[in-house]
Length: 255
Image (cartoon, rainbow, N blue to C red; front, side, top):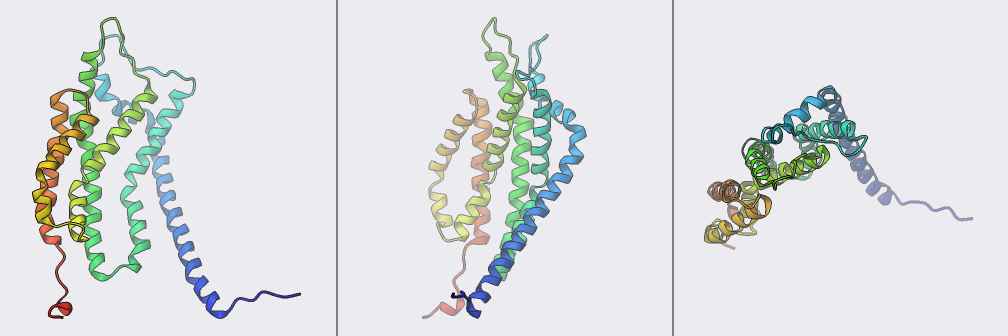
């Protein structure tokens, strides 16, 4: 009978991997624990949260109409789902911090100085995009839908369908507002230059209006409300990318 034995080198290479996996598990559990705590705090407010979220739609519903639930368990499940999703959105900064703390030891010092501002800015812009969707876009979109309802048809939206629709828009506008961060990263990593981005401005404007056409109802106002901010955010990203343009290494100059 033979006994397999690991060499000391193999054991040493396995220890760092196990340590990284244990740290990753620990940070995932911390993030999930914080999300759970926030969810438990929001659970008693789940019905109030849904009333607030559905406010833009209920404000434009015709008289004597209301939202409906087409399934037996929907009135309980949908507010519960909203509380859980809200807890996740609230905890995004802490979740990203755990990701940062896990990868930070493998980064250089100048990379760490770059990540923090970009991380804070990306979270802030994501929240701004969600706020813009709720306070500006939702009233216009739902007002358009209410006016476009054919005669003889009662607009009575299912609460589950409404939640899926608004969460999709929240995510779409949150990601759309990350345009400056994407622009800065493209320049910082050397994939493109600030001058090239400036030259591509006409294509960006056309692309912004195309995205606005796809994500909003077929009226000019709502398309402009998405396209113009995306274009302006692109211009902001181009301006700030001047501070993040890679500098040549002094040690390599003259070689």
